[in-house]
Image (cartoon, rainbow, N blue to C red; front, side, top):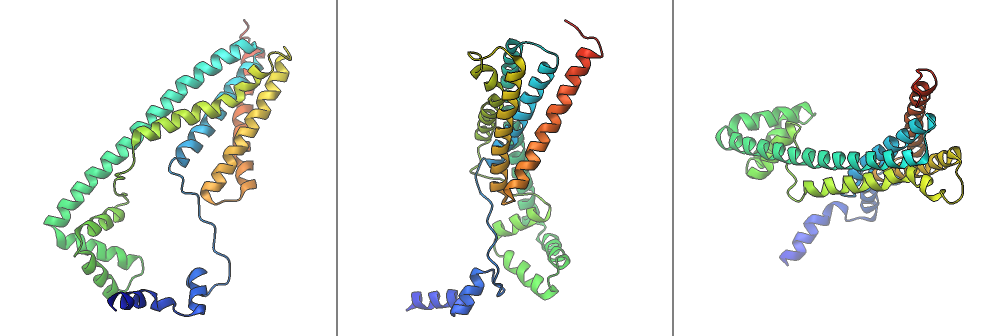
Length: 269
């Protein structure tokens, strides 16, 4: 009987078909379809960031080398050396960044717990003022704060959110973030270089290989643009266009620098 009463209490707000439809459409009676949720991949950010940086960096290097009319051997040696070095740097950087964020969050939580335990009054008053600033009625804000005050962990987390600090992620492993960043950098950064490997048996024309690198880089950037749109729940075409534009601008700038140094500044072999 108690279980039945509990079920009734939790479903009483949506006990009619109309209420259920309203709830499914956002709770306000709207008839528009529910917006698509973003993809919640755990390492999506690391993959997108490292992949985009790898493609742009590697292709920009290829562009500058091609503009100075160096050989495919130079492209491959410099390209892969730069790829491995930057990949290690990116991976270690992501690891250190994630570790630092967790350390800062843990320290902030310890400080907040102490403040809540030893200076509960001012801490609750700060929360009360924050909720009022967000538009909550003073009586409702006082009720919410008094309820949170019964649960120390919840109160601590709310206080951290007020200060713009997310609670430390217990399940997050910084070394995994670093490893994913390194792997993504190598995988996507290899795309522009594949043309200079695949076309070796078919042609010695450096321009043909460079065009192939352009095509492979564009495909890799488009793939990242699609992934970015999937994660953020944005328009696919717009995301791909922005990603391609970013890569094109970076590559054009690198090509212009290489051509200028070779043909105008007089840096001959």
